[in-house]
Length: 327
Image 1 (cartoon, rainbow, N blue to C red):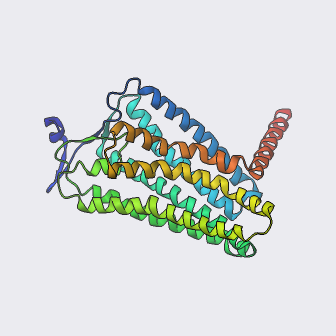
Image 2 (image 1 turned 45 degrees about the vertical axis):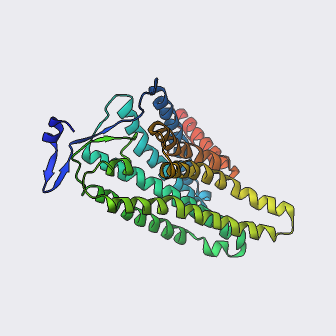
């Protein structure tokens, strides 16, 4: 921390808050800007795919079901999560604006962590939907109702918002009197709080709890759900019926694998051994952008029900444009 930054730091009692953090990004990687251009392309496709899906669910009444309420929540968090992360990354590294204002850094941290956590638990909610549909098909429409799904999603949002706000609030109590260079591509929780020069034991505990809440517990619940589904499918006599039921789960399983495995591997590697910052940045950035790109394609846009709804919307819009042009 240079003399100018120290002079600019806001000092409140024993707390030293720097005016800015510096995002290091890649170190010694030639042509790194091409990677950020790739992330820009991924973001554009993510916005288009999730935007079309959100519009279809909103405008087509046949999609106003509990299942598609969950899909809508996933698409919304995918869109918001990508928007919270990618534009900031592009502005920081493509235009060499690596200095991020302290308040903006914490705000960025809050929104990225919030949407990531909500995405994780939305996948659990999808697993629950499949579990009830396959294991208790006769009770499905009594158990998985619009009010029940709405209450579950609202609870998840409220709980995760409170937890993430607490996590970021505990970062704000730290004193940063040394380096302000964040070894990441955005204001990530761990790389930021480890720069503090006072006690970070509470932050460390919260980081482990957050890892359990956002990654471990959802993954365990999803695995247990599919164990129960496998048992239920094994009791179905007809092979065709088993295959038909299994097909309704494959898209969700693909999304779960794409979402959890890179992040889980990244965190385990960081704990048990050394992982190079460049490798961590690539793994983290892909883990937080590629699932959002693939979710609408894998889970929804290949569904016949959604494709038919999109075609109806397109035809309706086209006929409306033709009628208005004739008038």
